[in-house]
Image (cartoon, rainbow, N blue to C red; front, side, top):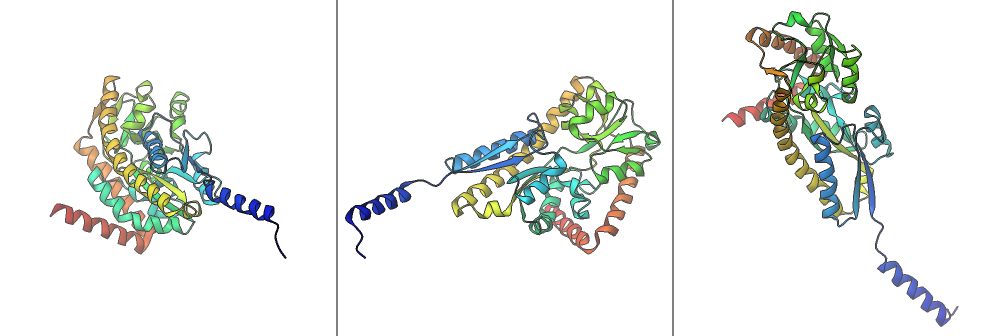
Amino acid sequence: MRIPHVQLLTIAVAGSLAVATPALADQWNLASPYGDASFHTQNTKQFAKDVADATDGELTINVHSGGSLISHAEIKPSVRRGTVQAGEIFLSTLSNESPIYEVDTLPGLAGSYADAYDLWQASKPIITELFAKEGLMPLYAVPWPAQGIYTDFELTDASQFEGLRVRAPNINTQRFVENLGGIPTQTEEADIPTAFSTGRVDAMITSVSTGKSMSAWDYVSNYSDANLWLPKNIVFVNKRAFDRLDDATQKAVLDAAAKAERRGWQMSKEDSAESAKALESHGVTVSEPNEKLQQQLKAAGQKLFEDWQARAGDQAQQLVDRYRERQAKQSQ
């Protein structure tokens, strides 16, 4: 059948318009439980900006901070289902899924930024594999400053933990508090002021960064800089959403993620120093544990580490072995 000339022209014009029309820009939602004042959120927003700049706006990542879109506990399930494309969480909150997620909250294993970085590099392959089984892909991880102990008295002996209600944000901190004789209480960061003011919490184990952002000087007087561990936040994406991007956009996301990880670690170091000064300027006494307390904290941490090894099995031992090998190479 012969197609009329006018119809041919119409088909040709429609085809040319289809070619000329640009593809619609992609938009991702990234849910985070942390407020805008947190250096983690600032870093995540810069990551989103870097992606937008690198893709000329072809991929826009909308960061929903402070739990405004989804609660902390629901972020990972929501990303897994694809309800949102990306999320940021406190990695050790996943400890009920695998003991591997607890590794950066083991006292005495990695108490410095250098050690924490080696531990992340050693654990990253296993964590990536665990995420992949759920259709997820880690983008980058950034640590909080080292964890210490906030009290409204001078902490000199572990016996002072007896009966003390201590804010513990993850399972290992809860076990650590129990090993010291305290009573662990799970409280989200945003609820810390209320927990102290209502008497639900007497003390807390967290970083100088959280202490500053939560105005810890309003309810405690002392901070024991124990360098217990450096826990991490992890930013991750739904793998299907990532796979739908073209090669150039995928590269832009990965490049921005690598940049965010480097920047985030540096921001954490800077925030640690600035936050310690802020605590002191508001009258909080910042000090290191005395020798007796250090040994008591070490003993409680060693028990925790041994329990973790027994629960985590061969995979955990391989992780620790890789970590020790990295440390040995760094010291050569």
